[in-house]
Image (cartoon, rainbow, N blue to C red; front, side, top):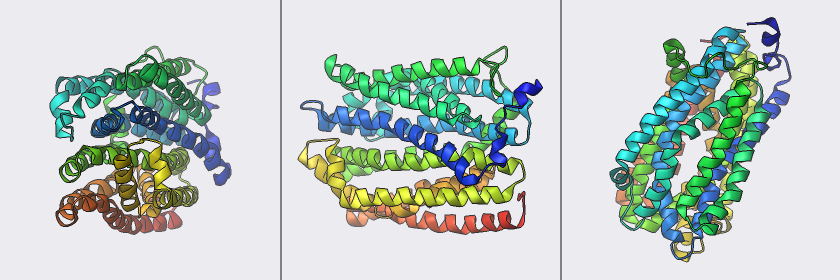
Length: 457
């Protein structure tokens, strides 16, 4: 690689003040992640107000959560792992290998996205019923998912390349592309849903069209030889070694999202059993609101990731510790804000999604119970991501699974036996406390390593 190209690597990550770096990287990440979560929020708000069928339509959308989580899991397996690997390689000044990661991302996203879409389209009806659909809400879930699945390769490539743009030192562009897709989606949604009378199909079409436009720009961006990471002669490429390494790093968030799929499926089944279709819709509303705050925390994660990974690759352990603690403080502030909304303003929050009094009442009650331990969520998410950033896969995987699988699934089974639908809502705070305890134990050990070594293993 030419020396001029090498000089464009983000070496500022190991020299500039941590607070300044986190602000520069996290703010675009926060905006991008919050904006990306607004896809589903905007869709839900419009769908929830479709005349006569809004309450059932939003319940149908909630049934698709497990599929969306599973799709996200596959995307993070490739995208998150690749972006983390690129940051570490840039920290090691290994530009040749870093450039080989990009075509790997394209190939893996296309292949895995195609397999996922084809399988789900072939078995969509039984899958949706397995995930909690009833005869009343199945048509809405089906109409939405057919279009989303048809465009899944586009979605995977868009999110994967967006993460690569951010990891290679251009977080503002990554943010800008995400904002473009969200604003475009918000404009097109009412046109397709109400203007053209397409209902839930219109929401899905708008989403895929907006992501397609941003994907085209991302491909053009990486086709330029001016960037430190760019396509060579071919957009597609594959290296088994790079794939194993990047997917190994992405295993933690992959399992976390896969666990979220299992949890969403089981929650839908339990809610349908103990509360009916509207209870599923209430969970959908709560999930959308909670997700907005979680996405802000994930944006902080995105800001921390290249800084922590790069400095770990460069052997600067103290800078890793510094960016971690600053990220925890910011994430905890966001968690407290979510707690305040959930406990003191659940009515106005739920009213954005529905005018149905029964659905709104279920959402308000469930939100207060589900999110009562939200203040500790930020710490756990940031801590889990730190292990991933440092390539400590086993610990990252364990922490990723602890809240959503190891503790939450048993709670979702046992607590409703004693408390009915109340037990479904209370399962979340119960698992939060247990997962928080495990996270504290592991993070204390890691921080001690970072304090005594510039390059802990």
